[in-house]
Length: 389
Ligand SMILES: Cc1cc2nc3c(=O)[nH]c(=O)nc-3n(C[C@H](O)[C@H](O)[C@H](O)COP(=O)(O)O)c2cc1C
Ligand SMILES: C=C(O[C@@H]1CC(C(=O)O)=C[C@@H](OP(=O)(O)O)[C@H]1O)C(=O)O
Image: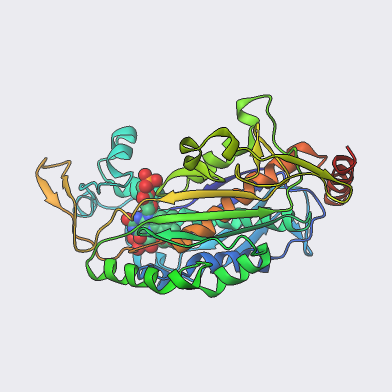
């Protein structure tokens, strides 16, 4: 499976084309829209989310509720486009109108300056429209298709917030994945630990009041992946590496950890690795899951636990950072009309879907996947084979 996305933040629409989804898999647009709605929620979002109501239109690849095996294309319209039609339209405009609207002031922390240098855009709107995290809408839509596939193979993926502005949620290891999903859905900051919900919300409100922004850490938890998915034989088939690449490709994500992550650097080997045990009912498994479900680029069959760190939002409402106008070379301090103060809760939904896509991709590479019922059978057979191995 693979996908591409197209679309600008204030353009007409966002599009994704997903290739490689097996034929005859049940898929309805409600599966996708539920995910899109979840991404829009979360305390700390700015005014844009009040304008948009993200809904996916399936424009190809699905017929009567089943996939065809042909590319699936999904479209999400930007409701904000109506306010930007004259700026974002495709038709040529008068030269003097154009000059007045040029964005010549790169925002620190964004793609603006580097993108302008690379593509030669003197109007940095040409960069910022595409580099915006608005694109994560259709990444979530593609991930929702992946989640639908995984769910029907008994694999569940859940994303939630672990930390905002240094306030950390305690992990209750007894929580099932169903409880993780339900609890995060109920929380305005998508956190499982109720004790930190209010402090996190207050930290977001404080940052908003000060016109500043905050970041955090999100976690994705996966249950039901059989052992041995991915590969050790080549760098580009290692599944943990693909997941890490996917996670750091999300706007504002700066790092990834599996299991105890960076903490492993401060521990002895005896405190890091997971001992192997076996019993008749479950086959091979581990007494601990400190490595977060991966060894040698492959799943161990234990839950996958992966964290991503999101930097604070770069656009600051009342504390604009210094930059340089590329036309005048004069320094300036950027003023803005709107921005999110914290998008960590929304980003946990994005990461959930990005991880789901990598997992579905790995599964469809490893098993025959032209026809969904055959894929289901192959995965079931493999589960039995490794249980008895
Ligand atoms: C869900 C989500 C919402 C975001 N909202 C904003 C925002 O309102 N304002 C902003 O300046 N950056 C926002 N960002 C972050 C920027 O898109 C990102 O920092 C920028 O594109 C530069 O990319 P980089 O941080 O990965 O280098 C958001 C990111 C995500 C994942
Ligand atoms: C539109 C979304 O997020 C946007 C991501 C974003 C950025 O710079 O990344 C900037 C803001 O856009 P605007 O300037 O239009 O207010 C966010 O609202 C979204 O998540 O759907």
